[in-house]
Image (tube, rainbow, N blue to C red):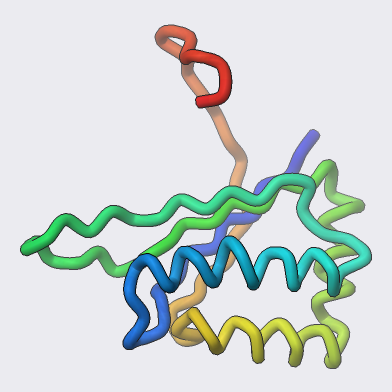
Length: 121
């Protein structure tokens, strides 16, 4: 059974929503993928929509990392505990995330489908 890790975080002060989204998706994820021997099979980013004139939410992104199983997750966690890889990850995250805002937790997912969606949604 797959295992999902959720991360909620705020962007670094001074970044636009577009800069934040671009750095996370186009720089950080490829960087981490190249750095790691293990890692998520799928990574989804749910960027919070902040309508103009409305108060901003407490977070800017909800990320979902899906691992094949607990063994893969354990290998990923062990690898991220390596001091060198941890330092490199934290250095890269400092370019686009507010480190004090990051929360990480495992979730169990239940889903109810009321009607099927078009393929690819």
